[in-house]
Length: 202
Image (cartoon, rainbow, N blue to C red; front, top):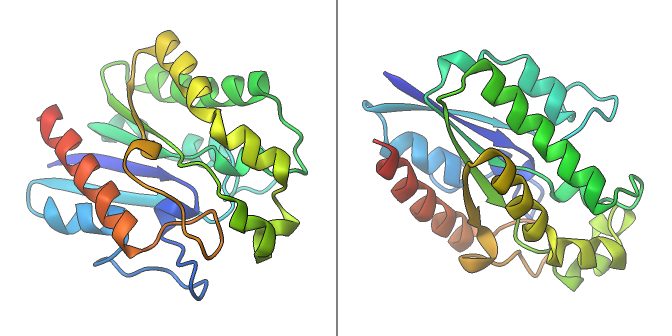
């Protein structure tokens, strides 16, 4: 059976902005994919709260380190939703830093499996409600501004590596509760667009 990896941060993990719990399989978009493709494609969920693209010293939260631990050759396709935590104020990353880190993830995958299908989901922009939430300790006005233009970095990376790219701003908005995560309706929207894209692969 073909395997597809869903790799990324808390919006892959299924963080619920209402109570900080994890959405169930029946709600989070990657869980819905797992149920929809059951028996035909094995969906492997690899989301982690607070994960960044680079090595930040935490094994689970370091995207590049976590990805290195997976056997990429086992997968038919990889779906990434990652990058928004790179905008945390503590990291002070500029667009060139973010571009390099994204490219490192793609290159790691392509070196191991040149013919693998890759779909990058460019994160939905952070809304200003984050400044009144718990996550105001991590993100600031600069983070919000960077998130509004992050799609341009993903597009630049796509030109270099020719992967599939979907801008989630075209389909979703982040929760008004914390400005960062998705509510139930928006998980359903992500599921629908990703489901259709996987079907186009096969």
